[in-house]
Amino acid sequence: MGSIGVLLVAQVIPYLEQELDKRYKLFRAYDQPQTAQVLSQHASSIRAVVGNSNAGADAELIEALPKLEIVSSFSVGVDRIDLDRCKEKGIRVTNTPDVLTDEVADLAIGLMLALLRRICECDRYVRSGKWKKGDYKLTTKFSGKTVGIIGLGRIGQAIAKRAEGFNCPICYYSRTQKRDSNYKYYPSVVELASNCDILVVACPLTEETHHIINREVINALGPKGYLINIGRGKHVDEAELVPALLEGRLGGAGLDVFENEPTVPEELFGLENVVLLPHVGSGTIETRTAMADLVLGNLDAHFLGNPLLTPLV
Ligand SMILES: O=CC(=O)O
Image: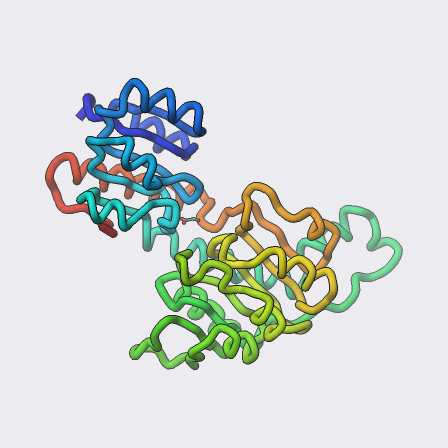
């Protein structure tokens, strides 16, 4: 398979890059000038694209690669891939579901605890020596809070299961009610937000879910409500979120993702009712290695004519 051209469009863990390099003829293009250069010389030999949650295959790249057969994403989210274009052209698409479910759900619970119990703020309190001048103020209990989940897919269900362990009543919104779930269903996000203490975004980013957290939802969640986003930055209208947090119209937010990563609204830096993470939902050695193995397994399966491990298209 050493003559098969694979285009890597995102920086990935060294293990994945090295394995791709060993098995395929690997081209790297992490920005527009690099892409233009690689395409000008090698477009017709590239049969696979490997991307991640930041960079995938848009219509322009797909059109520029006449021999493209498969896009394999080192992520579960595939919002950076033009799936319709891939379907039209018979290009296969794979992602990395399941192997990261526990990790992302763990982090969602971590964000809830950190936010309500102010764990990061308490850490800063100790380090800055302020404890010597007095005890830290009282915080908010997490156990027993009602957790509302947007998207009851694999990750949403894993978050629900964990939150149940903290005696949290669970409710959810999804496009359709899940027959096999006993959790309370709300047919709109505003109703869900009005009826929970902690609202978690755990759905894929699509045209319908872009800015699913808007002014109305934020106001429905209110000054005692908390927002957790482990989905995608573009699920949240940040231009509405930031003033709501600054003005105290929203109780707090735990955010792993942002609209314009790695840029985070600096107005948030001074707030103690936010916890800000650099998109690390699946970011452990164990999970990223398992994700890498899925990317490699899917590519190998495709080029050997075997069934794909995690086909999406
Ligand atoms: O954001 C991470 C992913 O989609 O895997």
